Length: 131
Length: 180
Image (cartoon, rainbow over all chains, first blue to last red; front, top):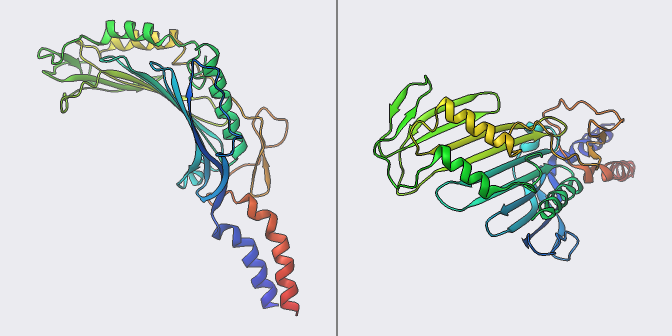
């Protein structure tokens, strides 16, 4: 009976002892004024398990140079403890007044890799529309 | 336009020109600069910069900040954070070197400018993902979905979905072994 109980407890709590999440990991430099597409299905983009709680997708746009960098990876901290699994998005636009520099960084964070990949694709396609 | 849509209609050069009218003069040091403080009083800020931070509903802080080590921090930062399905929480922060550029009057003009350019006060949630996420075996969907959203109350809630698939297999193997 003890062994059954031990086996049950072990299997129930095993996931807690293995904190890993599968996220796509890759980055891509992009030219906004070109027909270049964000491609998350290329061979360099592979799903990897890593200790962490959320997948992260970041799109950083340099308006002056019309370039962008897309980054997909893991968010290596315990954010999920605070946000309890919900998807989060942040955006920041910086416009310098003393120089001709303007940029935007948008981030999507989720436990679901597919959600952040979908977000970054949406964000990039929207940034291309009127550039 | 939501701030989460990457500036597809943002005329940033035009916006910068207008912002400069309220906030910026092209000199490296403004020895006679005056700023507003949190009590709306005029304070001298020789060789420094005026700074303002706030959110959409209110201004949180106005003060004079030092010039720093040779850098010119004149600029504006517009931030936005959103949880899934909720309105965005927006913040602004700027540093400027025109007289009283962090005062109530300039603050009002800057906010209106950002609203006009769709960067502030849009109250639009970020694009919703159509992807359903699974959390510890429970279904969790966006509010637009007709499916029930499971309340997420446990601080221990974690996302080890892949392991969930192997739990029952492992349980069977282990109990079989113990029987032997």
